[in-house]
Image (cartoon, rainbow, N blue to C red; front, side):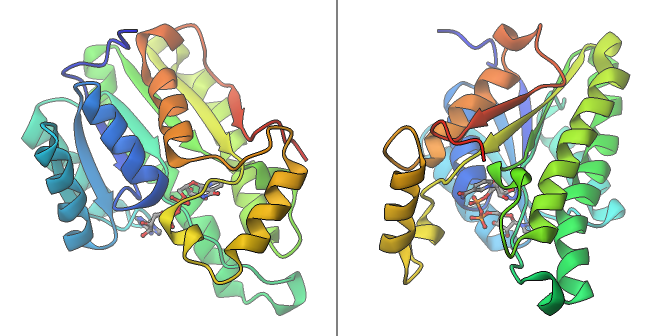
Amino acid sequence: MDLGLKDRVAIVTGSARGIGAETARFLAAEGMAVVITDLDGEACAATARDIEARGGRAIGVACDVRREEPVRQMVAAGHEAFGRIDVLVNNAGLVKDRTLLKMDESDWDLVMDVTLKGAFHCARAVLPHMHARGWGRIVNISSRALFGNPGQSNYSTAKAGIIGFTRALSLEQARKGVTVNAIAPGFIETEYIKSLPNFDTILENVKAKNQVPFAGQPGDIAGAVAFMASEHARYITGTTLFVTGGRYG
Ligand SMILES: NC(=O)c1ccc[n+]([C@@H]2O[C@H](COP(=O)([O-])OP(=O)(O)OC[C@H]3O[C@@H](n4cnc5c(N)ncnc54)[C@H](O)[C@@H]3O)[C@@H](O)[C@H]2O)c1
């Protein structure tokens, strides 16, 4: 299936590793030029080199999505390198898990700022480029945790918040050629998660709770993002696609 993404340009935040890196590789394999952006510049460059080694086009740009000016500079660097910005994937995220009474204000603020303020800054920086061509796709990465997980009041709140952001922005952008959707992953077996000491226990728990009796892989999210970014999704906006193996609570 031709996704119609060839020669378009995507920015994927938090893409030095994990789901973001796999999404960037997937989009590059579809013929897109990709901006790899994350906190660590050398890690961004390494992922970009990996994509180039597979015949794709990519640049790495270090950027903390919590801060407006670096985000503007990162988007400008992508535009300078590739001449357009068509797709933004707001993927940067992190957990700072604690039950509420043990949670520091800084743990709350960090998770909110990366997830929500990061999406705010990145969307504001890319939208003028999308409006200039009358076409754009914003895909926000939420989580099944939006339904609530113990120890994750900050993360669950942020991942539910990004759905509200998706809905509101989709209404603002629908007549400007820009769709805005969210993907809510369930448990995804990234390299980092596989390195956790209690990985086997986590995996057994996931297999027991999922309807589909296995864990998701980063490519499962990358494929869903690519679909939402494609021409085939032109009539879809403001929605959330759950890629969770059938688990909703
Ligand atoms: N892995 C899962 O099971 C799972 C499930 C549901 C949702 N998600 C979401 O998917 C996304 C990717 O998760 P992952 O598992 O690949 O995690 P990951 O930790 O491997 O990747 C997240 C990336 O975001 C980057 N990041 C963090 N703070 C940043 C900042 N301020 N500015 C720029 N980049 C920043 C990190 O450096 C990291 O490279 C996250 O939004 C996460 O919440 C993951």
